[in-house]
Image 1 (cartoon, rainbow, N blue to C red):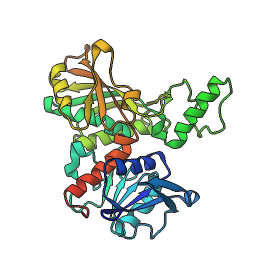
Image 2: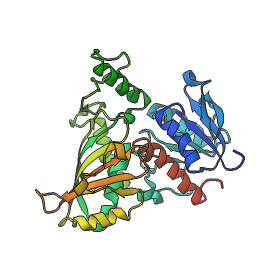
Image 3: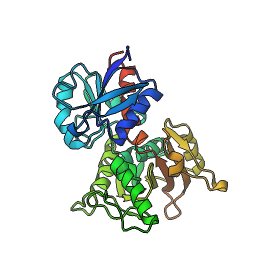
Image 4: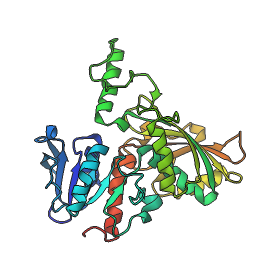
Length: 343
């Protein structure tokens, strides 16, 4: 680690934090110095990177001194506490939390869609909600075929969206269920039994009747796509899957929907999207295909038989990768390519 960027990762012990380290190696991200930061209770632990065992430090006021780019994945409270400290120290902050996503002057970026929202003066970039990223990766290419006026989405969200603790809870609860036991001691507060179960996303219900996750997907998708006129109706549900979210999507166009063949063609050419739509083999997007893959998978493409302006599809994407860590690393790569970060 002799040449490149001085990088900090806040939330290094979490599920997304571990993906950052793997992606840095996999993508040859130019790291000259890596600072792994977390809460005080994680200080003293270590993580492996490029054959070395690196210490994890408690985040502090001087932790970002000399850092070029800081990746945050420690929750909104931590981001609000430390983002200004990092930017004041000269770092560019790429934040995976919800803290700044809907702040007007903070770009909410999916590089394949709206990378131009980042400018040379940008010091804080927000990574969108994982479900919104996966959705917009499939929606954005369709705009070349017509104006979208309404989108209806039902999600099948994996445990990875709740972090390492929720993933472990699913594993433990499944084992307990199969062993005939009453559950586990590590059930996160507010969650129902997870094994062999489906339940509404574990975020508070708002006055509108939507939960917070649904509201985030609707608002953030409009900001990513740069179109406040699109109407969204989103239902977010947790399913007993460890990794990768799925979404059933109906898209309504202003005019007659494009043909299935046209949709297939535009998605085939879209960066970061992979078409999985083999009807004769019943092979379509699913978590086992999407997990640990960088691309968002799209399939089950068909007309909406109830609406001549409608189109249906099914999508899947890895929440920890394109839904979080990969999108953040791609933002940093874009900024370096443009000369906004040191070379």
